[in-house]
Image (cartoon, rainbow, N blue to C red; front, side, top):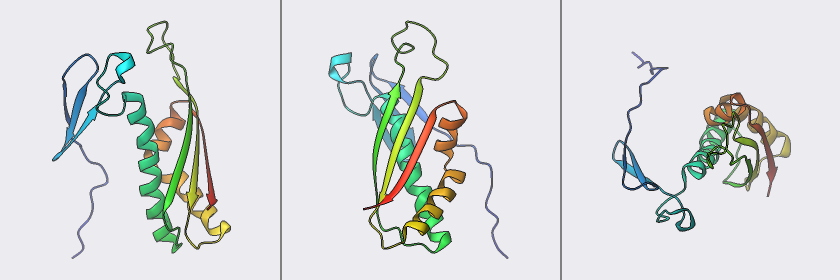
Length: 151
């Protein structure tokens, strides 16, 4: 008898603020530092909250991209990423509420694998369908552009 995977999970995390700028977040047995840089009063022990959000898109694109490649039988090798973000900081500066603080994100994904350009674009299309962090940004109004290319 096959085991059925749950399609909806409740994920538990906890956090602690150590100062006005530094916090830790724990999930399972992993703890991550989130901090502001020194110039903003932090201790620079980890990514800022916004950098943490951006890095989640890279991590998710990597995980889902590799899952899609495997499902499609495409060898994408290793992926590398370059990202640019247009961030409207008026909200974090307490100047005014900003509905879409991350105006645009441009993510460039490079594959060093032997796959063809056509197969890589198939992986890209499938990844766009299934990456939950990409969906989060798009559905929040961010203009997300992800381009995939061969090294």
